[in-house]
Image 1: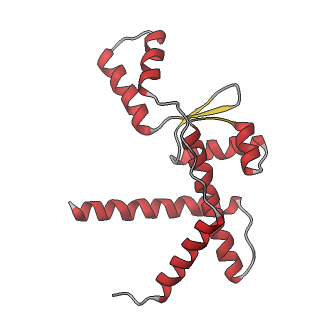
Image 2: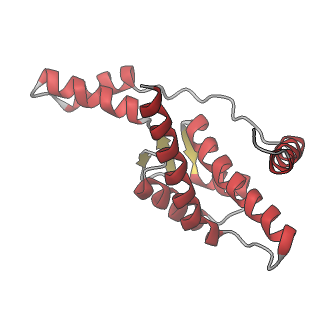
Image 3: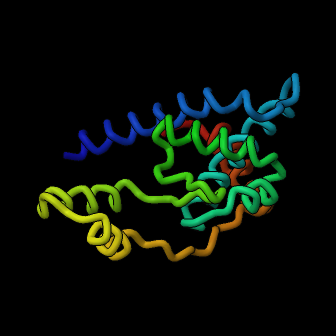
Length: 164
């Protein structure tokens, strides 16, 4: 069981690294040395912040997201669609310029209910979806520069500490 869990963690890490490789080109990085590494680390952090922002907001106006991340609205739409295609986020883009984040667990709960009910009306689906899908925004955790500095120091210490 522990081995299966370890394997699952390794697969998750590999998947995240592959995904990051796909996304790193969307962010500018410096051309050389430590600055490039710092920029790469920051880019990965920005991508995770973008995902967390959508996840915690639950219903996010795309123009608001654009303002928060200093992007154009179309860039936000492109990133949301790309993240959805890669399976990093799940949800709906509505026709009013909002992204509604729906977790896989919430989608599975709705699918299970539909399978149990069989034939249903749109009204019943709406009522049950409102019950099963939590649309209340949560507080978005903020990554401060101090957090990033601590992570960089810990990473540097890990690299210089001999493995036991």
